[in-house]
Each structure stands twice: as C-alpha cells, then as structure tokens.
Amino acid sequence: DTEVTQTPKHLVMGMTNKKSLKCEQHMGHRAMYWYKQKAKKPPELMFVYSYEKLSINESVPSRFSPECPNSSLLNLHLHALQPEDSALYLCASSPRGPGTSLRTSSGNTIYFGEGSWLTVV
Amino acid sequence: AQKITQTQPGMFVQEKEAVTLDCTYDTSDPSYGLFWYKQPSSGEMIFLIYQGSYDQQNATEGRYSLNFQKARKSANLVISASQLGDSAMYFCAMRDGRGSNYKLTFGKGTLLTVNP
Image (cartoon, rainbow over all chains, first blue to last red):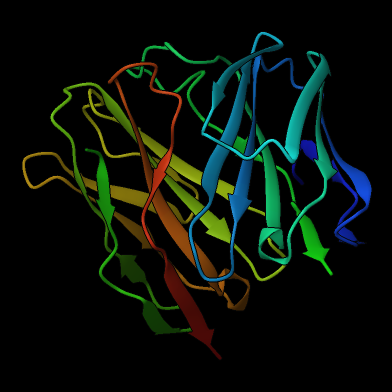
C-alpha cells in the first residue's frame, strides 16, 4: 500500500468553483511534488516543495496554487480551471530534495500517491 | 537534454513467462538514477526498482530485475514469472545530476498485457 495519501480520489468541478486537492505523507520525507498526467501520457512535473518551501514551479498557470502547511501535508488549490485541466493529479514525496547525491539509492526514490482524478465541466 | 526512450508501446506475455521491457536513456552527466514505475488502470504510480549509475551490480527486487548496460545506455526491466496482476503501464524514468536533479524524466511508457 502507498504511504502517500491523496484526497479526494475523484473530483468534478465547474469552471467557477474553488476546490482543493490534499496530500499527506508520514514517512518523514522532506520533498513533496505535484504532477499532472493526461490520458496516455507520462506525468509532468508541476511543483516541488523542499523543506516546506516552494523550490520549483514549472511555469504552472496561477489558477493552480500549491501550499505546504507543514512537512507532512501538501495542498493544491484550484480556481477558475478550464476543461483542458481535466487530468490525473499525482502527489509524490522523496526522502530528500533537490541536490541529493544520486550515487546511492537512499533518498532518491520518489514515491507517488494513488492520484486524484479531476474533471472540469 | 535528458531523454528516455521506450520503444515498445505495447507488449503481450503469457502468464508465468518472463518479459523484458526496453528502456534507453541519454545523459551526459556521470551521476544519474534510473527508475521503473508501474501504473495500473486505477492510476497509482507504483515504484518498482532503482539503479544508480555508480552501482556495480544490477538491481533486483523480487520478481523484478533491471538489466543495466551502462555503455549501451540501456536499463531494461525484466519481470519473471508474469502474473495477471502485472498487466499495467510501465514507465522508465531518470534523474540526473544536472542542476538540482529534482526532475524525473519519464519515457512514454509500455502497456503490458498478461494473458492467462
């Protein structure tokens, strides 16, 4: 079973709605990520939080707003989305963040949650 | 730029047989990590196995093994004794030592179907 928990599993929202996706991990990981995955495509990185600070924003539109209230929680606030934003949103975490040596496996693996299926109508 | 190539859009295998999923990569950095993930239709991205560029031996995790050929820049996943539950999309991915190495670059994936 995954140790990265995402809620809700499914979300349908209108283009004027405000909603949030939530992610939680209790593995003591210091980096957390949001990915977006369209059908039949690989995941695409959206945001990276390292030690609770936003370290990477992959030029994501401002209608997506991430938040990291503490080291275990990661939220993605959604507002004024478009139908093309419909996708699977994957949260992930890793023991250490950017700059970790890749010489060893420990600290490098990124673990994903089950995902939140978002439909914008 | 980083690049991961998975040349098999789909693969079929009989239950209990072994199957190899191909992955080649391109990086100029000597420090990198290679990953394989499994994604069933439910959507969860499940970590399977990791190989570091400096690891001397091929990684193994239960029925999964990674055939790492550094000179050829290939990192093929071998699944032994296939099970019906192995039917899923499989992604090869890489992190390299360039910059802040936070980014996983994924291949396009291979859809594996295990037949009874």
